[in-house]
Length: 245
Image (cartoon, rainbow, N blue to C red; front, side, top):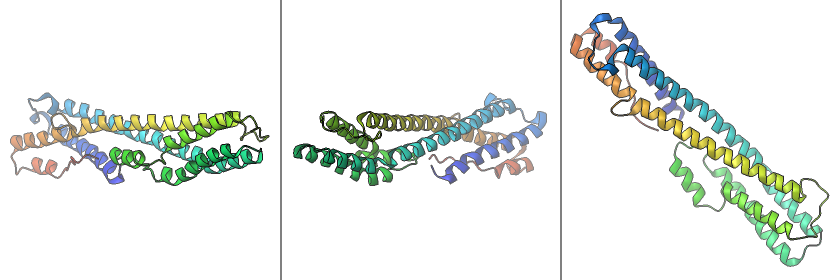
């Protein structure tokens, strides 16, 4: 999501708060028949929108942290795969085993650039999905290739390195870490996406959304005081954006 769109939602809330202040100042003259347009009704939807926007901000922070955590976890995978290949070859593995090992390592080496190219911002889920699903180089594939490498090593009894991070147990621990951060990111994205849907429903719903209610308040004030009245001019300048992300 772009910063300008986040700002747009915040501006909607700020303008709606000003709208409530004006309506409150009109005192007893402001007495709409529709409950949602009353001062208490406006205060209720403003609070709901404020909480929804805060939920998006919190979810976005969690998502950004998950993105960073996954990038950090995968950062050294290419170098690790090369070390495994060299250790396997140094152990005296057969030629056929090395052919398979080098083929897997090649896939892991190629995965780095595409994994970095996957969009970090899920503002456009379709674009994010396309970029990963059309490539062999997504994070899911990196995990799959690494799992195959570990499986290959498990079938090679001659592979017995002394380095802790190259031992089977160390590699399995690394695999668990990669799976955990990948799952955490998926969950964080789901939470963020759902929070945005809820926010958009509260603010942009064409029937009961905050922007629609603001439009109805403006019409009511114009009907109450007149379209050219000072009161109407007060609220006319309050703009509300309807564009979704």
